[in-house]
Image (cartoon, rainbow, N blue to C red; front, side, top):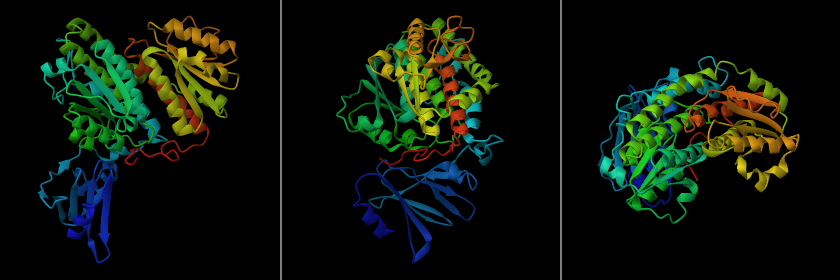
Length: 470
């Protein structure tokens, strides 16, 4: 172990390492250097386990410890001892993880992804449960460690994430600017870390991540912290690196997400950002108790609305049979829903391998409209909001050029008759909550097209659940 420690002290960059010597196979040495992928040490009865993520160990134990940056674990079957790279001993708490193997099983569903899509009414309820005070018109986030004075002092929010979580951040920009009147910057973590961002104590850095182990997010958090900004993580995995190193953490309570393509974690990200923006709006006296009460009552109805979208999948099967051989799709929306167009296109690319692009509807005339013909289906997302007429106009422009239009729209919309080829109706909710209900059709369109094409839905080629390397 001394030789390993001396060698590790020479390493630079981000590493997660497990070492075994042929001369002593009864002992493993593991280390985490920088913000690389996680190292989880599971404690059993006369046996120990090592893995990069908790679900791998759930069949064996729920008692786990986690390595932090610059820590080494020496593991035998009887236990583990921990040190810093300089040899200083470290005392590690063994945590009991509140997950079990049954919750990570398919439960009769053909794929984990379909199971996790179907779990969203419950997972969303778990995210908002206990955090809403209807009487006071307020949000209670016990994990939030910032004082009201500090919240009022923030001049800007910087939301940083990768992939699907970045789309949640784009929705978060609309939420914070609408509900808390705070300017928001949204950035990819893999770009933020290589820029020279201007950050300071008045800027709140928020990292949004399902796993809490994405290396670019972790490095970006460290950069923001070194620049003097308070950090907050919105994260699903309890005990993850992001939750441990941030000044404050808000958990998604989505439960384990096994499928590589994120579904229920994404909708819970939207809900968590909505709650946080409402909290900031109340503390900063932007919205009063009555408006907050109305917003919270609308949020409380969303899980049931999402549940109503799970009862009949025939429209998605029909669309899959019609369009599974198409090579390209376009997704369009306006306002707070345009990030959902981006997310819909990403889901289709991830699991069906069909090329897809998402755009704000107004951008069609700035280039993408040249692609439209009878071979490209266009998924148009509508909500009863201030830009409704604009997206209807975009649909008319697409149809005039021979496009096949699939409209995802509020139930009972009278203005689309004869203007679109297919309609997927969604429950009517408020403008700021419409992304939550509009996300479900995006997931189901991608899922059924992927199944029809014979793709490996849960483990798409070339992808990993947690991106722990550059």
